[in-house]
Image (tube, rainbow, N blue to C red; front, side):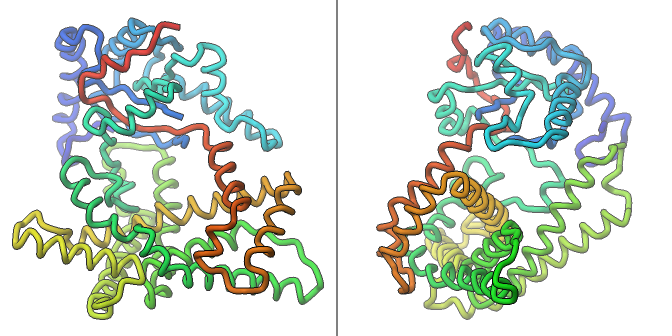
Length: 434
């Protein structure tokens, strides 16, 4: 894993690796135990087993120095163990937990649960040579999400760049510009126009179920792949309008790309691995090129068709981008480039497809566990719509259905992993001693 910024000259990488280890314990003493400029991760209640180790952070001296800073501020946890930290213990507990049947109420992150139970809320764990601080105070979690300058986003893994970049990976002015351009696509009045696309995707899925049932009168159905397809279909229709069939192809390619990225990421790493022309690497490059070509073709087609229309995300995005460019003239930084638009389109899938399908599946599971809520929700839908086509006004009257979805989100979303570094002087976030 010792490569320089261009992936060349390993001996320069070795120097890059050794110098920070030699210097950091001495130059950082000026911080008086604060985490100014340190690489200390925050775990603030999504679990992520993807580990990216930067060359300057491997070793012994820097982790030990960070451990002393953490303990000085009242945090407790296991002592640092060379290179692996707590990863072996975590892997063993996950493997042990996965070997048993899982109940709905079980803990899905056993090592984190064990740490909090053993050391308390003000604790930390080791992700390799990098400490992860457990943040369980609502005020501190709020600070993490609002103090953008102090809590920066992680540097992107080259593998993850094959999947998407977009607004979620940007910082500062670029993030503000992209957010300003994208925001109009998610205004309530714009979302109302997309209701027919939502309805059509749902009807298509239910029609498939009805055909399966009519053949034998009943059938056992795995709803997960159907809800996945419905979610991707909704996003394809709302993102690309009349080009949604091409959008579906992009989704299939992105899904395959995600599987290949996970496969490569979990394989044994050695210097220069990602540059080898293996079968997997060649396929990843092919997918990247095909996705780029498909999106470029859709954008070129929609550029003319979108004039005077704003009933899909791509049209709204392009219209908003055009206004931004006109407002700031011919400035180089004005608006988004075609490449930026492509990345935002790819992001529509990753931000929307899996989250939507998982929420629907988990809601279905919990409604099956609580049949009373299921009966009330069904009764409410029949009362509001009957046999009529759903409309926006009626959806606002589905109080029980809305409450069921919110309850799933509030009840089950308990853990989030932020691969975040503290870049400013965050001494104000010192936890109280246990």
